[in-house]
Length: 231
Image (tube, rainbow, N blue to C red):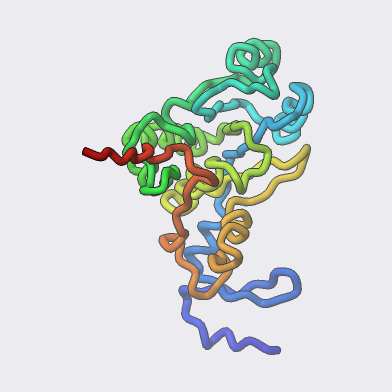
């Protein structure tokens, strides 16, 4: 089908993707194609060698640990002390920031009424904003930075549902989520999956401000049991 470009104003761009013509706001096309040097990775059950191989495949310079509790029962070689020592022997510098941009802050105001972490509330915490700004500054400086948590699947982790969401929605920086050596998944694709396609970055009506907020995948705080007392 022929497209009459005169039907669209200068605020839009028409381009081809997967053999289909797409019409997108020019500002959103520019934003979604901005260069980003920010990545994420989950250690899961990887070996230390596998983790380093994945990081090296994207020339990562700095690894930022965003685990609120930087210890693993199933992967003790990724405990904070062990991983600090590990990266002293590599060309990647390790830093811990789980105390400011971790997924489980020690702040009762960050829970919803059902005990889930509410990422919209967490995004407004001053310490989180300060930590996020450090990532933004690193991206501005062109440094290759990867944030690390324990969850292998980025769509189930606050790396995408909180940090990646804030970077994309509020700062037009799209995080790259490392899946395997030389293989990444975009933040936009993950949000599209999380919303079952309801949020589409390539829609004519797409607006970054409408990226939804998310919550933790499970409740971390339960209401105290009510004990009935009888006189």
